[in-house]
Amino acid sequence: MRSPEPAFDLRAALTDELRAAIDELETIHTDAKAVHRTRVCVKRARALARVGSACAPGLSTVFVDTARSLMRNLALARDPAALSEAARAAADKSGKRTAAAFETVAATIEETASAHPDLNFEAARAGLKDLLALAQVWPEASHRQIRRGARRLDRQARRARRRGLVSVDPVARHKWRIREKDRFFASDILGGAWPGKRRRKAAENICTALGIERDALLLMEHLVAEPEIAGDERNLRRALRMLNRRRSKFARRADALAARMRSRS
Image 1 (cartoon, rainbow, N blue to C red):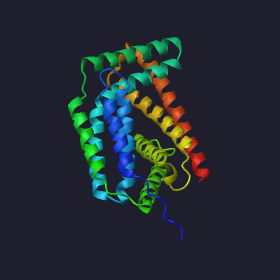
Image 2: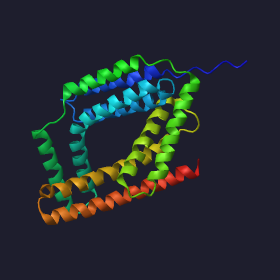
Image 3: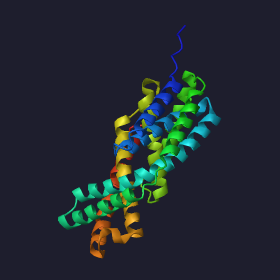
Image 4: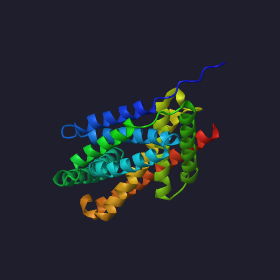
């Protein structure tokens, strides 16, 4: 009789991700990228918690809700950095005048964020400790439960992909990105315990394209809401035109990559 396959240690994986997030958060005052790395660790843990809903649905819901609150707090520090990075990335692909406009935008965003830091560090630390406490009481998951949770996550990603593909609705596009990232992170961490093909490289490329598309859109919205940060009206028009081209380019790239992935399923 064939022996059962060993179950993936979900509790240990969750704990590892959250301990890594806590370590990253502690470097936030000396490393500008620490908030981003903290958020990635939390997103990876959140994906695992969604897989773990198969053995602990109530605990999974509490974990995801707690993570959502924590991510909102971390976003207060991360969002300005993401916008300034998006502005500089667009500057690298622009002509001299438009690049100068983007440099002005990036510098203004950074100056404003530096003068008015919004991250509640102690609340973020407490949120991570709450998540760690939840992870440490996660019940042991069987091999069958891990597979069931992973397949559910995969279905959710496929559904979001179908709805977001070629859509002009930013909400549908953003939800697609979230679900695609969940699938990518979970498949990466589960390794051989992931049922079926992981397609990590394709999923990573889709997530990257969707991320650039979204950052361009958010920066456009920011410029429309605060046009003065572009310097003058001519700079604003140049920046908006460039960002719209960039948004469209990466939206098409994400759609093409997703269509190719779907054709190979």
